[in-house]
Image 1: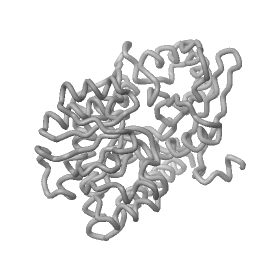
Image 2: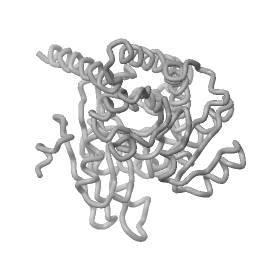
Image 3: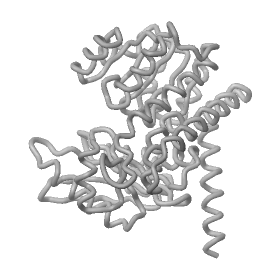
Image 4: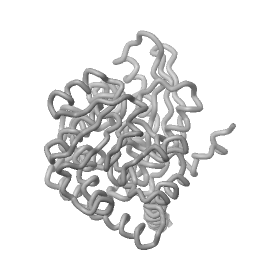
Length: 357
């Protein structure tokens, strides 16, 4: 199947396949839209079963970044990259330096940062090959790990969604299941929720991380597959995507789905299935935009925490408007968010073409 005929292609401006035999690099960079500015989105490293899975992931993630950035009203477009994690031992620093050379070949049309499986230190290795990288732990306007800000945005979004789905913003006594709870974002989110008085049910492949959450917050550890069956009020997916699908939807008892994971719905049509079951769904690229907002200050060269907080306030308002429109019109929240995002991108593209003309 050609990339151009891929079900998730969605008129990407560019898709770059990059390899490096010496380091074992196999990467795909998707540039979905530069209508608002250079495409920006993190780099994910994962053990993909094959290159088709990697391509599907990067196309969906790249499109999601376009929607995320436009909904957060940022002057950047959407892109994403994935690295197929090499089998066995490999030189991590050399691998990311090779990835940096691939980023550099796009001449600034794509700016990378860290995502799942990647750290700020990895981005420092990328920085040896290109200037088009953010989320650095040091340097001018460095913003560092965006995970804490992503978690704060998700925490705020959970309160907004809980107000619609549970009738209250106060999370005291609310039962919340966190999938991927021991990840970068999940750990910070668990801290916010525990402080707010929520009762946590957690799962992750990182058992040591789960034990820390149990010791610190009294969280209940459950199995990876058992997380879907918990009798909770809120389900917070904070791991990988496509976890709301025909096999899981009827197992979820929560009245609210709100989490940090990208592409939580296996297909756009799953939004209607969520709505049919009376579940309030917070569109992922709206609720999890805190991280990209955080690195935007680094891109601009003038990181300002107060500006970041203002943008998080804006995300709360945007999410509330989407959920209210969904309720009033009886239409899935993900469809409404997609429509708004596409319209904004088209307006930016038209304005850009007008300036060129």
